[in-house]
Image (cartoon, rainbow, N blue to C red; front, top):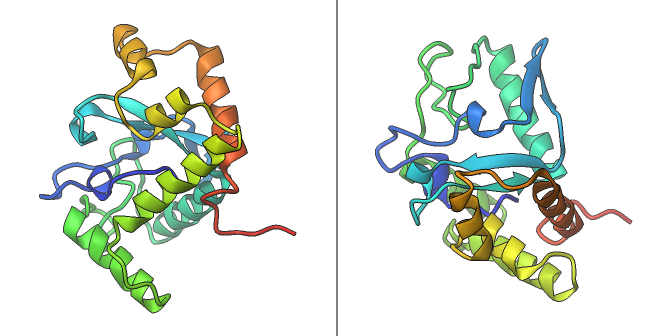
Length: 193
């Protein structure tokens, strides 16, 4: 839903990956995961970005539901989630969490895809998300510069973002959030009638 590369979730050697602090609108209140805004922002640090630049994207309402359920299960199992806690972590012990490797993440995705009868590489999910966002763009739901930015591609907005030291005007961020929200049905897996 956030159009992320597997390497962003967990590096090849398992030394880094997305953390709770990369979700600035995610809060844990009384063992519940709460999102201040949805779709929620996901900040991709430069060391996790293929192009080595910081950017942000969003996670859909549907994605927030799944992420919230996963994190709440970890809380119920006794893990003490903190800002530096990995979003995806090995399930060895509730006290010694570490990042999953890219290989482990893609293996888990591949196994789930096989169970669903899909015999493709896990990276096809990123291609699927980008294709769905391009279709949304063709229907006027999101502008091309916004689409490029949230996909992590360098473009017009990226230069403004880096010039402003990683800060875009709030109006532009909210405009991007609104555009992303309008695109949610395209990569979504829940069909409402």
